[in-house]
Image 1 (cartoon, helix red, strand yellow):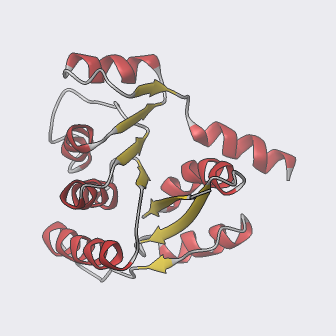
Image 2 (image 1 turned 120 degrees about the horizontal axis):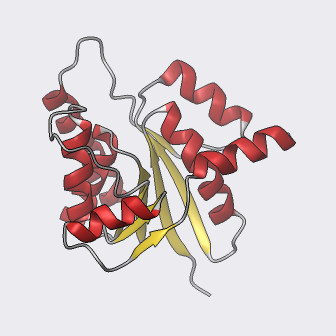
Length: 185
């Protein structure tokens, strides 16, 4: 039986906290081969937390530098994603949220014709510059995503208002799952 190659992308500690339950669920399912890519944001906070949750990183881009602007970050991320996808086969790319990491992951997946799954899809504010650049990232990611996992019905309704009806699922917020698992631990 062929295993689906799934790459999960994490940029920041909040993204990791929300991706951990999904990563664990995928890893426990024998149908999937799961690889974890981190971009190196929040390094001091992210790496120890992933170790605490026993999440093994496959690739670390280490892209962050002091005083780096968004254009430089975006260019580095696209180059790194391009390199990873030229070296590794990927059936599905998954990322969470509205960061530049998630936006560049979605854009790179689109360029490579890899389906992209967006966790925490459909969040919106009425002004494209608030928060900046996150609101633009959210809207653009939705246009690029193949699967939309929304935390609330309101988020799904936001996508519907934008003409996105297919492959939209209300799943709840995975941070709640992380909280429950942490309390058990």
